[in-house]
Length: 113
Image (cartoon, rainbow, N blue to C red):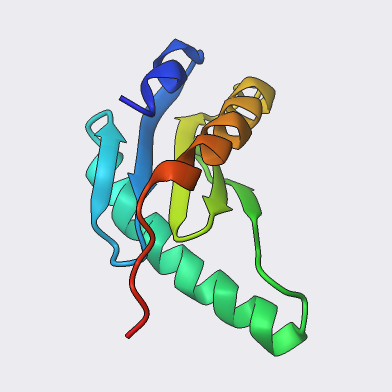
């Protein structure tokens, strides 16, 4: 499991690895499928914002809601994300996501249409 190391992070509620097609390649936790779907949707919006602002690709996003802290990184055609209980320190999760993203280079990329 690629996301296995995230299980050791305190407070993890869910984690997901998702491709451009929006289908989860791997999930952790009961909310993993929902997180995967939302990360795919979020990536579309962030890519659009980056293009419209001329800012380039968004490679990392983090936000806090009433109950969770979410951190996500992109790597090529993939998005890796983790949701933690609010108030948890996200640094360990961020470092692991960055390392895991580097390992995604061996996964096949989507074929251009």
